[in-house]
Picture 1 (cartoon, rainbow, N blue to C red):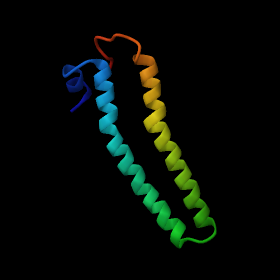
Picture 2: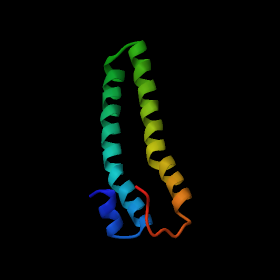
Picture 3: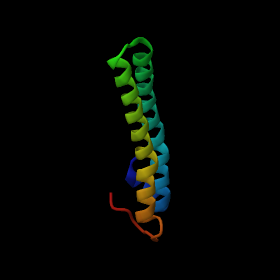
Amino acid sequence: MNAYEELRNGTPQASIFAGYDKAFDTIFDANITTLIAALVLFSFGTGPVKGFAVTLSLGILTSMFSAILVTRAIVNLVYGRRRLTRLAV
């Protein structure tokens, strides 16, 4: 379902919620796959490879946090208090 179909089925706020709800699974899946790769690197690597695995893991966790929580907070801050009749896509 794209953004236009979401808007036809409800309010813009409901469309924003549904979009983030559907995007969460994709974001989570892609980042967990990379975290598994970092775990393998940390387990079998030595020296600088372990350091890279730790840095990669921290970067992925930070990216997940910002992709899920920070952007949602910003969108809710911008659109959450308004009574919108349509949402610019």
